Image (tube, rainbow, N blue to C red; front, side):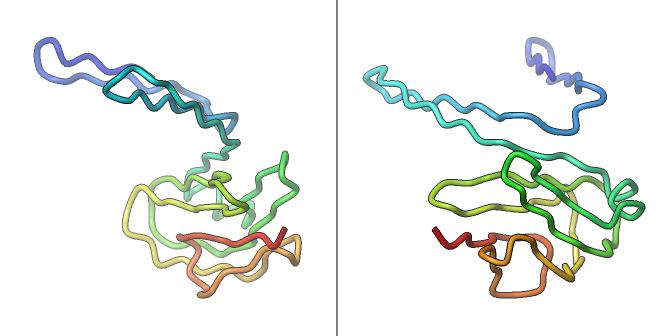
Amino acid sequence: GTESCTNGCKYNYDAGVVGGTISLNFITTDNQVATYEAPFTLKSIVDLKKSKELTLPIENLTIKTTPTGTGFIVLLKNYQNIYSVFSSSANTSKFSSITPATVTKKTTDLVGDYLNAP
């Protein structure tokens, strides 16, 4: 999407985005650049209620859930073998299983960080 703040901020969101790779460039005050790229999946709660699965295919990761609420969920690969799930609104959904078994989470909450044993 795009953002324009010339005369008040206006946003135009891309339609049909369901996943891909997010690229972030970090620029220091002395113009050094570090780039971070990570795969992500974006799913509406409406679609998640139908499929009951949140997947990151490139990582062979599947999280099964019966979600509640509205909005959108983002699943992305974080750094150091951590996956993160974010919600666009308050979300109390729980997950029922994670595949592969090397991925674990300390609570049953859908939103949060999932650890992947190396």
